[in-house]
Each structure stands twice: as C-alpha cells, then as structure tokens.
Image 1 (cartoon, helix red, strand yellow):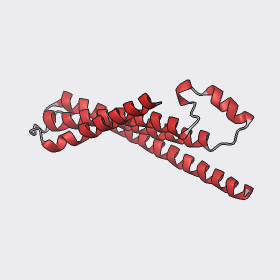
Image 2 (cartoon, rainbow, N blue to C red; image 1 turned 45 degrees about the vertical axis):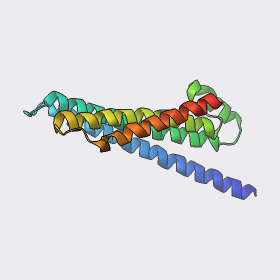
Image 3 (tube, rainbow, N blue to C red; image 1 turned 180 degrees about the horizontal axis):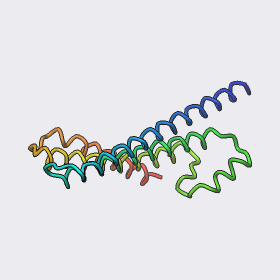
Image 4 (cartoon, rainbow, N blue to C red; image 1 turned 60 degrees about the vertical axis):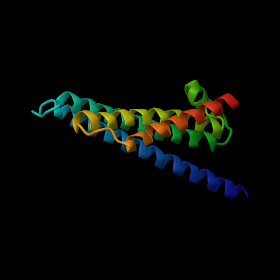
Amino acid sequence: MRLFFNLLGNISKLISALVFICGLIMLSLAVVDLIHTIMITFEQTENKPAKMAVGLLQTVDFVLLSIVFFIFSIGITLLFKHETEEKAKLFAELPKWLQIKSLTELKIILWEAILTTFIITYIGDLALHKIIKNEPFSLAQLILPGAILILALSLYFLKKGE
C-alpha cells in the first residue's frame, strides 16, 4: 500500500511539473504577443491605437492564463504533499490566499482567476470585432458573457453556502 501512495505522490509531482511548464509556455506566448504589440507602434496602419489595445488585452489574457496554470500547479503540489516540516515552511512562505488546504479552496481560487480571464478575453474579442473589424454585434457574442454570468452566480452561491 505504501508503494501505491508513493507512486501516486510521484504522479502528482509529474502532473504539477507539467502544469507549471504549461504556465511557462503561456507566459512566453504573452512575451511574444507583447513584442508583437510593441512592433505595431512602428507600423503605419489604420486603427493603430485600437490594434495596440487589443494586443495588450491579449497579452494580459495570456498572463492571466499562465497565472491560472501556476496556481493549479501550486495547488496540486500542496494538496498531494505529505504533512512534513518542509510543507509547513512552504505553507508559511506563501501568501494567505494561496495557502490551499482543500480541493474546494483550490477550485474557488481557480474559479475566480478563470472568471477574470474570461472577462479580459471577452473585452479583447469585443474590441477586435467592433473597433478593428467593424463587424456588427452578433448573437453569438453573447455566449461568453452568458457563461461568465452563470459562473459568477455559481461562485456567489457556493461562497454564500459556506
């Protein structure tokens, strides 16, 4: 049985490392997007401020997604680590909002981060379609705000129930 739990511990460490690597990839995509946005300043194009604003929103979106991956990686590490003095030290060094003690706490933190990411994504998408491409507003563009509303209400009722 001990061998089984050690195997599960090693698998959780591997998963945590892979999720952390995904966060690093998203952060590198944010840097590439930021460089691309800065390059727009030197181009002679129409709607330069709007294109820069959309580029910056997409950069922030990538950064927020990388934060979601980092939080998930930290949460997996903390939740599946044995109670030791080392874990207590690590726990004390983390900010209070990252001291995850249960899967529910991790879920709520991720939920809030994902909601924020969705809002930034929607604002960037709306600016891209309305300002740059000058497309009319469509019914399909209400799907993401509807999802944001449902997630926000679910989070509200979950926190109210605690």
